[in-house]
Length: 470
Image (cartoon, rainbow, N blue to C red):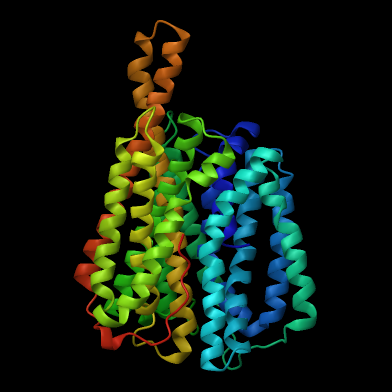
């Protein structure tokens, strides 16, 4: 449910944007309100589940997620939908770590635990693909609102099974929470995203006082978060985890790939529906080649990792991903799906699998056992946070490019048909600009991996962390 919700709204977004009259500058909040709250509160959610009780946290997370989904499904304005998505992210930050921790506690025998995590990983990986297809089916044959309302029966089934079957468990020892840290980091990230959003608005731009104030405030709050983590007794993110060269490189790589990846998925969906005129269902199917690429490369990367180590794969993966995104910059009004879009998406998926499989193992290199949960959660958090910032930034770049193209070409238009064509070409120009910068971000991840990661294949833990792909 948590993974599915990151992608299901992508297909529904054009319909929701039209129904609730959401502007192009603000549409990214449907994605980023969820990923920001989820990524910003994920570490705190992990701590809460450990100390408060994993079963209790799981159940509260499920109830809250269902309630937030109902709120979003009934939204009558863009602001109400954004708020509901943020609430979904917050309850998802309780649900995801609690479910992982329960698996770790319930399956103590190594072989059984490996099997449980394999099932969990398959569901997490497949959730993205199911989200795209389900989003297409629900948007086309019911209504975009059902992309949110569908979570209610899923949550009710999970609760009905959890109450009799799942035992309670909790950690002991120091059980203090770093709530100020969680608030400061989430506010800092939200301020940055809001600054990027303001920059996309024609009457603001990058040099407006509002844009610069919010970006500046975001940077200051993130610096305050770092200072807090160095001083509090039980920090949300122990700096010793990030200070390790390999892990620091893994986190930066995760954030950069997340930034390019989330944005690319959003604009590919918008391009398929708004420019090529695909129905929501057809757009859902048209996004599946990425999943095919991920499934292939995840299997190959899992076999190669013990033989060649993490570094070669983490350089190859982003290079493949960046190449795929760069090929998407050549889209046009009548781009062929089978000749251009499908191959590019398969290569993008191959790149993602080669990147995220070694990332999850690298996050645990040399981590003391009591820090393993925080190190693993931090990897997922960096991907979500990178996705939030990347989506907001790429949406600003795309919106600005669309506006610039339309402004320069519309004065010479002489007929409604020509005006419609210029409008579509403006969108193509904007999406192409977004793909270009997404490629740059992902390519930067390859450079970071090459410079920072020094771990050899002997250093990798036998059991890696579980990382979500996409």
